[in-house]
Amino acid sequence: MKAFAAYHPAALALFFLSVLLLSMFTTHPVLLGLSLVGSICFCAVLEPTRKFWRGMAFCLVLFLMTAITNPLFSQEGVTPIVYINDIPITLEAVLYGAAIGAMLVAVMLWCKCLHQSFTSEKLLFLCGKRAPKLSLVLTAALRFIPLFIEQSQKVRRAQKAMGLYSGKSYHTRLHSAMRVLSAVITWSLENAIDTGDSMRARGYGLKGRSHFSLYRLTAADKRLLLLSGMLLGVTLAGLLVGTAAFSYYPVITKLRHTPAALLTYAAFGLLVLLPFILEVKESLQWKYYVSRI
Image 1 (cartoon, rainbow, N blue to C red):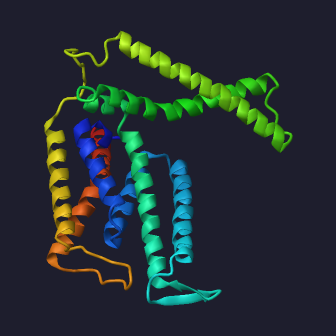
Image 2 (image 1 turned 120 degrees about the horizontal axis):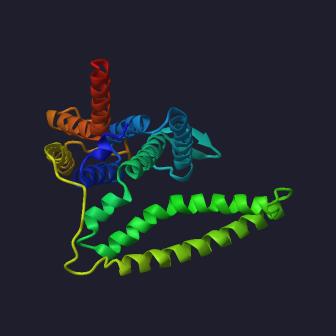
Image 3 (image 1 turned 45 degrees about the vertical axis):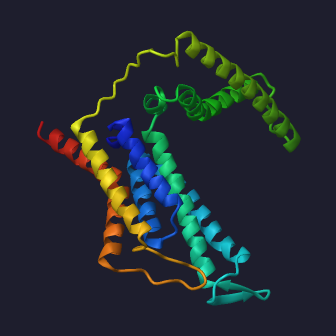
């Protein structure tokens, strides 16, 4: 299911910028928890089951490592839990490490969803007219990673078929890997030059050049833009006026339950759950129409 990816690039850009910026620049436990839940739900409907659970296992390890290592390097806080070699492990440091771990996992999952929903063509559509050189560089960078991996696998298989790739010892494996890396880097440089020459020959970036696009702003796109903008505005307003303020050091503050704080939580929760809701809605509609056939 990729119903959310079918929306206009402007609507997708506003949504992903909103959730990524809010997730990266807040340590509020409720907002981070909502962002984490929203990203997990969205990944669950985008990825196959086995790939999803493999990713979740890596995210769990990353979260635990961050939550465990932060108290070892930060002894701030006034509530010691245990002492390790006269070093206090405080409750505040543990919870702050868990918050940072949740933030890292949420941002990583949102970036994974961004990669699957926001293609290089959409980025080129948004930035091609205003910043053609920047959009070309960003598009090439986004496309470079999967091409680099695919080409490295081809080179490795070719060298293995030629008898040049050996795995008998660590030295030979390292030498073979360096040979593959050298070949792929040379290929990537040549490919970048060819791409630049091809785009220049087609007149890319020239003034007055027309731009063809299949993207049209529909009523559904406008509704998504409006809803995302409203939810973002409510969340930002709540954060700026301090209705959802929270601190870990030196003492953990209490979560606020005022109507304004609850409204901020609800707005951000609905924002991060929008893709999952739209995907589920599209799936239910599809199953309903199939059942009517």
